[in-house]
Image 1 (cartoon, helix red, strand yellow):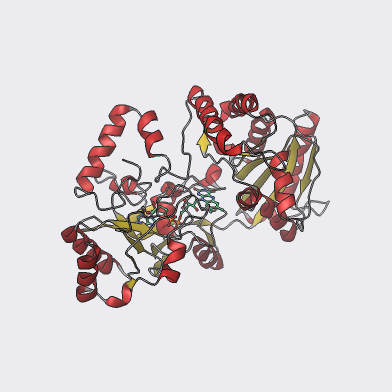
Image 2 (cartoon, protein in one colour):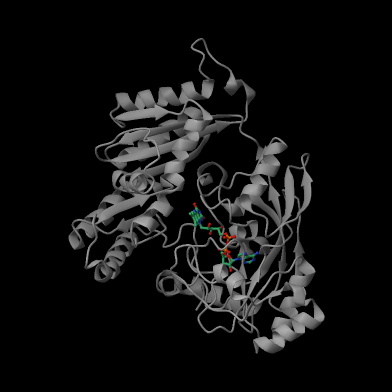
Length: 478
Ligand SMILES: Cc1cc2nc3c(=O)[nH]c(=O)nc-3n(C[C@H](O)[C@H](O)[C@H](O)COP(=O)(O)OP(=O)(O)OC[C@H]3O[C@@H](n4cnc5c(N)ncnc54)[C@H](O)[C@@H]3O)c2cc1C
């Protein structure tokens, strides 16, 4: 099957886009965590939408399974082929051109393979800002961010990837090109197909080009770390910050002591901005693009820092926090963020963690945290509870790491621990995937937890857009 397909691609498009070399293909066959390993007959690297369309037309003729892939930083196995070896990976990595940048319209139109961080750098040089940000920004692509409706550390203020996108160009499973590459901010002309493709994880179509919305670049920032002894205090502090700053809070992240210990153990050269005996740290960042936020008062401190200082003082008076530190320069700010951004890498190096990506109403998050922690302790006294992440969005990577020094029963404990977390989650009516998506990892769980009629409509949509089931089959819908 793949042979005929590849022969046709070679004859009708070009042999130069086909890669079969094992060494080049290897990094495309396993995911970042090493949880998914697949095989593929080839890796295709087209350079424009027309080529993607031609590839899909041939795939449709030959019933060839295609697995779209961007930067391969996804955490649910969505871009990794299965073990059959019959799939072909379609990498968008060579589609990395900027098609249009407009300072006046505050938009940038880019091919799907552009790396997120490159977009940050490019627009920031022009005084603008693309706010989506996540630890994998140096390798994830705009197409992958759209396909997963990525979240990250700035959702609190700017929303997920869905909110950053104005228009898309998409190739369907039979090669049809849908052009909805509009740079319009308002466009009420019928059904919103764009938002159907965003978050569809490559199962409904291949995103080839996107028009993204830009905002003013923040020119003043205040970044702080505060210590709380109870998770309940996180939301109270966030509400103070949001209220007093007029919703200028970009990021509000939580990390428990157990996780910090792992980060410092795995990265011993990191300086520790604050010591804590127990509890959690909150990493918060407020930003503004108003020039007067840079102005100093008599003390010589920028206005935004003073605002954060006052909020933290209030929190100290109200016994919400026990200690706090504000970054005094960019280098210190980077130190704070390095601790947070390297948390996934640190737990990966430390052991074989249980990873989740859950969300609950943010006013129920503390209750959930305590409930799930009790459930975990009932199964495993010494394991390390490392629930961390985007607490301001009600989104936690509620992860569990085996006991310090190792636990011989860890492989047997994993399933009951995961079940206990999800049982707690169901009691709080939360989501099994806040931002990473479903991929291959959570297909059964999705089927079991989604409203049955909703799931039925999703299946119908998949069948309608991909009747031969050749586009990333067995992802999301199984
Ligand atoms: C250290 C680390 C931290 C992370 N932090 C976050 C975080 O804070 N928030 C968050 O949301 N995610 C996070 N992620 C997950 C990941 O970075 C995001 O899901 C990202 O959006 C994936 O982009 P990618 O280009 O790597 O996509 P890939 O991993 O290549 O693909 C992801 C999915 O999208 C599909 N796909 C890719 N490109 C296209 C396309 N052009 N058209 C159609 N389908 C396509 C694939 O088939 C697959 O199903 C993190 C990952 C790592 C490793």
